[in-house]
Length: 236
Ligand code: TMP
Image 1 (cartoon, protein in one colour):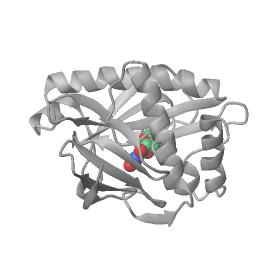
Image 2 (cartoon, helix red, strand yellow):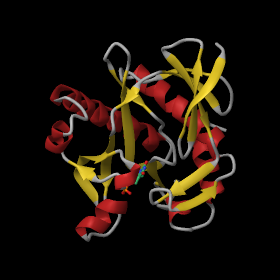
Image 3 (spheres, helix red, strand yellow):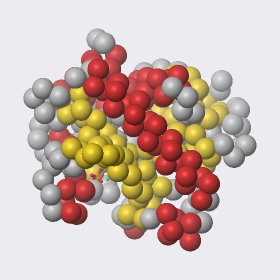
């Protein structure tokens, strides 16, 4: 596997071409942003934690029948993944009220839902990732109805697997964001990352936040929270 030119640099990761047209290498950075890049900072060690934790989660999900882009971890920050066209929808599942849900509907954080919710945001930085519904996603040609149905089913399945998994680590999975991609043969697979950047994770006993909200909300103890999640996930 030969690493070739950089294809893309995002807010938290870089993507490189390889000598295989169907594979790319993602490289995780310590850079952190929030509020569509308005707030910028560094979370030391985050790139390593998000890489290792995402790969752990993807392998767990693969074992449970969820297809992902994961191929092989190369180093503490770099992983080979299948090259996909990202479906420009951020898929958000919520088990408990928090964040933009609490704000939008004027409710407190921490209300447990009787059933998980799903919503989509249109992945477009210039527009600030606006909330979008199925009809609008179809009208814009972002995905087909069959793809949207498959993405929803996969997202709820991911929630079931992850909820149980985090529960076993004494962590509550409050909500999370997923992204899906389309492989060259048209298959929808789970892509991007699953990390404290993209999930809200609360300690089950103390309800302490162990995720990026500590950075977004200037709460301090950001690195400590990422390290604590890494310790629980990797058992060290
Ligand atoms: P929200 O409550 O701000 O809409 O966030 C819901 C979940 O999605 C939360 O776990 C954080 C995650 N998220 C991202 O991964 N990327 C984003 O850009 C945003 C806004 C949220």
